[in-house]
View 1 (cartoon, rainbow, N blue to C red):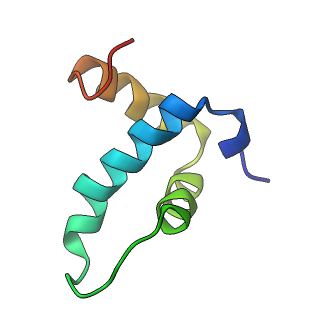
View 2 (view 1 turned 120 degrees about the vertical axis):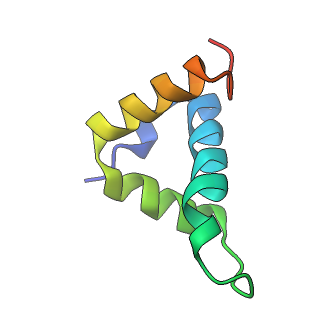
Length: 65
């Protein structure tokens, strides 16, 4: 079951930004990635990994707490 609905809109937005900049950079340029594709990748990471990514995003000022 997906845990994305438990994330705040701000957290989800930050995670989508991280996925686009970090993970999608290794995909071919001719492919377009939607928020749905980013959400599927985020969901596949698991809840513990997501909490670590959010902490790193706050620490590196991708988002302000």
